[in-house]
Image 1 (cartoon, rainbow, N blue to C red):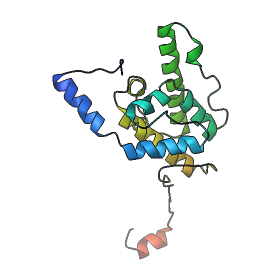
Image 2: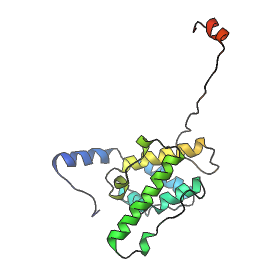
Image 3: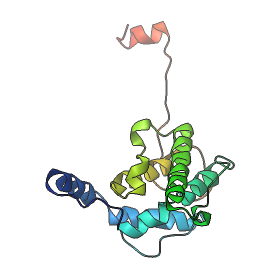
Image 4: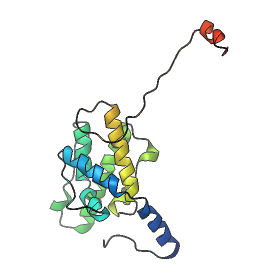
Amino acid sequence: MANKVQGYGFSKEVADRLDSKYRQDDEKELNEWFSDLGLGQPIGPGKDNFQQFLMDGQVLCSLANKLEPGAIKKVHDPSKIKIAAMRSMKCQENISFFLKWARSYGLNETDAFQTVYLYEGTNMSSVQITLFKIGSLALSKGFSGPTIGVKVSQGNKRNFTEEQMRAGGGG
C-alpha cells in the first residue's frame, strides 16, 4: 500500500510486531459476519483487502446502523469527492463517527482503535479486536441478527441481610 509507512530500525520493528498480531482466522470470521449482516465483504483475503474494505468508514457506519438503527445519521460517500485531501478527511470522519457511536454503545475507551490505525493500516489487529468487542456487545444487548465474539457478562450484585452475613462469617 502506498500510504503505509515502511520504516526502518525501531519503527520497522514496531510495525512488524503489530503486523504479527493480525490474525487471518479473525479476518475470516469478521468477513463472514459482515457478509451475514448484508454489509458486503473484501474483494479477497488478506490484511490489505480487509483494510481497503473498511478504510472509508462507510461499512463501519452501516454496521453501527445495523446494530442500532439510526445510530449514525450522516455517512459521507468519499467516492463522490474529487479532491484527494477532502476525500481522506471524509473517510476519517466516517471512522470517527463509528468510534464515537461505539463508545456510546458501551465499548470501553481502551478497546477502541485509533482512526489512523485503520486509515493508514498501521495496526489492523487493533481494528479486529474492536470489531469483536462490538460483536460481543451486540450479543449481550440481545441483537437478533448474526453476532460474533463472546457475550459480555452482566453484573450479578447480591444483597445479604445482616443475619446472613453473620451466619456466613462475613460480619
